[in-house]
Amino acid sequence: MKTINLSPNVSVVVPQMLKKNSTTYSMYVVPVNYEEIRNNIREFGLLTPLLVNFDYEIISGNLRHQIALDLGLEEVPVVFIDAPEEMKDVLSVSTNQFRVKSMVEIASEIRFYDEYYSVGQGRRTDLSSQMKVVKDEKNSAYKSIGQYKINKIKSIEKKVIELHGNNIEILNKELSKIDKDETTLNELDKKLDRELLKRNNQVVVPSKYDYITDKVKIFNSSCGDLYHLLDRSIQLIVCSPPYFQAREYQNGENELGREKTPELFINNLVKLFDDTKRVLKDEGSMYVNINDTCRDGAYQAIPQRFVIEMIKRGWILNDEILWTKSNPKYSPGKRSVRSHEYLFHFVKSKNFYYDDSWLEGVNDEANKFSYGTNNLFPKLISGMDFRDGVVRTNVATTQHLRKMCEERGFYLNHTAVFPEVIPMIPILSTTRPGDTVLDLFNGTGTSGEVSIKLERKYVGYEYNPEYVMASEIRLSELEEVA
Image (cartoon, rainbow, N blue to C red):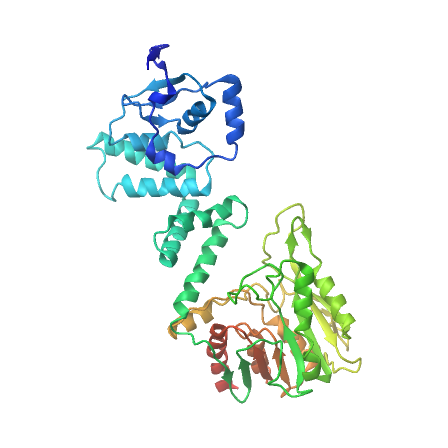
């Protein structure tokens, strides 16, 4: 084996003489454009020299070295540098700073700098040239990554460790979903939060929990069979079912909304409304809040499919209301940001009860939700846009309820709530004081809260006992006042 000196800086060596850098070899995975790099080297040769120390260990160029071996190259260009043993790893990582990296590789770099080359807060680095180099390299690397990404990756790693221990394979599997565009850093962080909350709640949340009082009945069971309820005992049904492939509610793989196709989802959804005809009064109404989902670059027409199937089953579509949101979720792709959801009004008979005289006492001079406010007979308009009106629709959060639940010893894992105005308008328009309102998907009891405030009775169905407990906390104080 031999070394050929080309210039004062560049030499040529036999690739078998070189030793891989174990730190970066395990840190960086094979890039997606590996074949492109390999083909370029086959055609043009190795144009960029490898950096090696005087022990022939590679500081920068593991990938190029491996390709040289694969191609059977007889010699490769190298630049020898004096890299002290305690500094060779940080120099090796720093030379990869501007490489396009996967999320797994970025996480490996962060662990590398934090674990082996961390400079403690308040510790002087000006007294040691090596420590100063380490600090500068770490700062430079962190600057290129970005503080938001660093914080999120550290948060994700911490939560994976809490859930699964020091299992690097599980961590890398989760992070690789980001590179595949299956999720984002923020969404992955929130998903792990939900998994932690679910595990913690297993200690304090029972497997079965109903909440029953004179005015409120929330059953911890599926709404597919309403055997608790008598025929024609419900005046109004108002609900918001899970959306298609939009959110996981930790109710198992067979939960509604996780079906693989829109057809399966619609079929399972409309079945849940079969027994509602039995319990709904002939003069009663049903309002269903539902939204669409964009998959593979196209909306799935979920609301439209749902309406068609409901009509086929004998329901009468009386009204279609658009809920306009002031804080819509960003819609990626070549389309507008979707800022509305549908609220469909179904009835059993054309002789249903409806009274919108409550509008006469409402001040809506700008006609934000009513038509002809200055006339004797104002009516609702089909677009509920309360962004600058009497009710704002961007305040529907569970922050206060979460705090109350924590005071009771468990953590609430629920964010998909609709604002009170969604059940409020149907309740005011289609029920009387003392009537019973039913929500098939109770969640944390928003419909129940509005019902109690408006002097109605309430029945809810909720599959998750954690949400039933949260509903009890939310509604018990209201019942005492009512």
